[in-house]
Amino acid sequence: MIIFKQKKNLVVKKINFMEYKLSVLCSVYIGTNSHFFRETLESIRIQTRPADEIILLKDGPTTKETDIIINQYLKILPIKVFQLEKTKGLGEVYKVGLKKCSHEIIALCDSDDINRKDRFKKQLTVFSKEKIDVVSAHISEFYFHIGDLNRIRKASITNLDIKKNILWRNPLNHAVSMFKKSSVIKAGGYLNHLFM
Image (cartoon, rainbow, N blue to C red):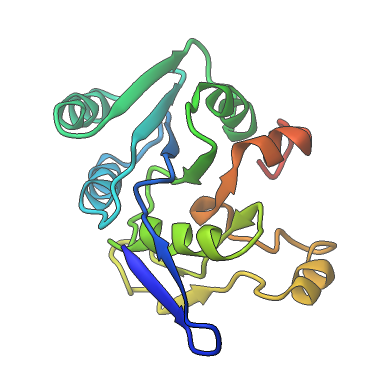
């Protein structure tokens, strides 16, 4: 719990990170790197604010290694696995996954993303303080191991930056976005197109 104090009126606002139910949406497919996938699930396991559920979609067939990792983490994380018969692509998978998520707040996580241990807590803090529909973050890109590319992909921060960049690229880093389910559904949900 974090307490914010405002000096002028001595207003105290208590934020209980457990009051927000959190779904994590992730997918795997035949090309999933099992080493990174294990690290992804481990980074979800050690979050300072744990997920209430993890919706894991299998986009068509997956490898034996991926299935072994899923079975190991089913014992220690609140994972719900859903199998799609044929590979459909990320946009179509997330369209299905959005419906499977039980909670209003959804954190996206690619199967090769290693989350900072305080990611969920920090992003939920933003939701608790601001009237927003989505929050994203900068990401450190890597190839074989963390830091090997020494490259940060920055998300747009201000409303002006978002409006300016949306014409040329996604102003958010989609893989580390957290959003309100109702807002995404209201906007039309996920579509299956080239960049999803």
